[in-house]
Amino acid sequence: MEIFEYNYVDLIVLILLVITSLIGASNGFIKEFLNFCVWTLSIIFALFLSNSFINFYLLELNIIISIMLFFVLFTLCFITFQIFNIYFFSDLNIINNGFLNKFLGFIFGLMKGSLLIFLIISGMIYLFYTTKDFPIFFEKSIFFETIKIYSIKVIEKIVNFI
Image (tube, rainbow, N blue to C red; front, side, top):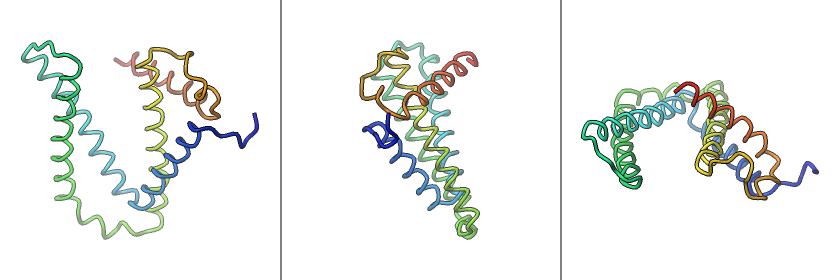
């Protein structure tokens, strides 16, 4: 396999990494970290609240209603945390202009993009319940096999943790 034989999966991975890195550099580390916290807390609270709601009312919801409930709660949590973030941390734009802040934002954006790619591949492995029978365009990818191996390890760690 030659080094310049990229397929669609490789291009999507590279574009996603470049975009998240540039957004991270544009925002700076502090703002990027706060945005990451808002997204993470919104997901955690939405999962907790949706599970608590379903368990409290002992509901047997189908998957579509459960997903809709999660997204509604996620949206409410996200808006709440974003308002909190804007209200309390709006003064951080003053220190958001330094080179070190932009460089660390670039690195953090790259790590955030890598995490997003690992989560997408882990989700595919989980949804398709396979680690071997992926479509041929995934198998021809330069990056996919490495990402798949680490995604499987992440899934195993999460399952063992739970």
